Length: 440
Image (cartoon, rainbow, N blue to C red):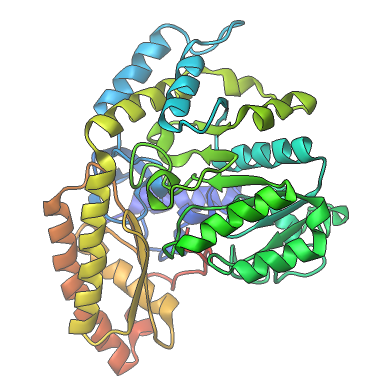
């Protein structure tokens, strides 16, 4: 392994000062292999990252958790941001870029009339749910998948810690969430219309919103999405499309534009919208978006200039370079490569996810140890890898070929360790901790 004295020392300092080490669960080193994973970076450019010891890595892992859709330190986006900083980031007045971004997002999504901005996905989802409740006067939210950490979502586990098992993580206690929110959030599985119908039967008169992603691990069954749309219309609920992850993976805009063409009432964007700069958006039809004026949704830092400037530059380059097509093409190579190599080495491998945000699992007695061993083997060759592969426009065919070549040798050693039953003893770090059920 490469020396990581400075990098690991920083982690030990963080353990004393920051609960959970990282602000984001998915970036915590124990999600990979604690003890060998380089949790801190000094710089990043394109598809490469340098740790605090100046070790250089090709990043084929979580790609900035899907936020840096173009790649790290994209020159075009950064130059736009630098220019904006030179003109002042904040003042007593509003920046015109937010108007330009609202126009651009509504142009990309002709069904939408208005937009509001915040700075991260979770708070944008909370805003969308607040708007839906304000518009309908109802309380209950039906949802499938993962949609953030706020009370409205974790309320699904109030009264029992198992409702989110298939959406976030198993056994999550909703500590800190008001018990009075019990019965305000109900999950259903993607493509399982009967589960949503049961929620409607139970509380249809009090249904404020139906929240879902356009696609995640599974392709949407054509009739499922339209049926959800029909239920929203019948009940008066607001259909909220969570595009935080799926947005910009297939086209310049929401995945719903190309995956099923169903029009939501509201859509939420973040992650790739600003190529790593903090920006999120809620867009929607005028009669529903206007309901935000009947409640209170407001924040000082939502008016700063950097996020909206980065978003405008990201959208311009994303469309010009047809980034979605690039991501799908490379992601298809990765998924097909995993399947081929799994079969070659006798691994019972399961591949899923969007092409640009893929993941695999292996049926074995101790997958956390197997995952950590794979990470370790890839790190030995200077590649950040996990059982996730989130791609960026900066990734090239050569990067993917190099990655799959190393997967070939790593899968061979992993298969050998599983056959001998000595995977755990081969680890230089710790086995991977459990993460999001949907592999965020």
